[in-house]
Length: 339
Ligand code: EPU
Image (cartoon, rainbow, N blue to C red; front, side, top):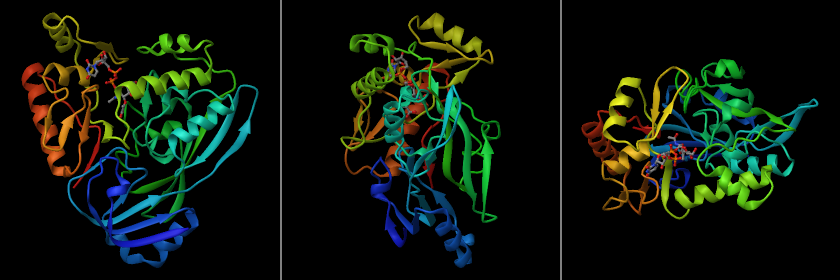
């Protein structure tokens, strides 16, 4: 299936629900269709390109004067297995949470803590999605993609993806230069459960046995209690990253704010909770016209109706400024802002 549109509304392609027009929009379900499209429309190589999946981590500040490409490649299949693992390839267009459900149904571990994260399989490696002690890079074996500049398929082993906290080579060097077409995951037949984040263990035990399905359900419950669902209240998950700061600054903050959550990182720095900083700066639940900070999780900005991308951006600037003034900490946006 292919679909090509001009002056196409992206409102249903971004979970913030922002009205923005794409000059051109191309959706495909098969890599060969993308290749044919690009080879027969050479003029598109002059256009600015934006690749979008489910649009759950994006903020449009205005109309997009270029070509939006939406890979919608389906399919989940087993690549190989041994005694410990099964390698499964999933198409970029598969819905992430449906893939997690599939893994849990087949008793395969490694992604159960990543339940209910919005977005597509193809977007998961881009920002190395993570939650409740798991990051998707821990189970990625290979990322398959299509190189838009050279019109050829390419592959990346996990090591070549340069994964970091909410970051990868796909968000840096290859941003909008290639399209992820599928991801090969290495899932575990005998998983080691990760329960030591927040309330996960407590919630799982309430359900009984520690197993994949109870972990998935516990994570879903925790997320639902804190994070607004995009169908109820438009948002793009965490708007900012949790900032990583020098130890000295973290120690100074600890002296002043006894209860500040601090998470030491491997490189001798300290990760702070952006949600805590924003809440303590007085923003939790604050609403200005159609933009606001969610009442249960200060890291999430919401669109109550007809906010423009620019309004949400301006509001986020005020939050950044206020957190910097109060704590001396610079917040970095996690959401991809498109100009
Ligand atoms: N906190 C507050 N006030 C708030 C929010 C959080 O004080 O309004 C405190 C919490 O009490 C806790 C700490 O901050 O002590 C951390 O909060 P939480 O466990 O809710 O997680 P987070 O650091 O705010 C990150 C991810 C989420 C992910 C959760 C759970 C980032 C940017 N965000 O949030 O991911 O679901 O951990 O693992 O790393 C996303 O990326 O879109 C996302 C939702």
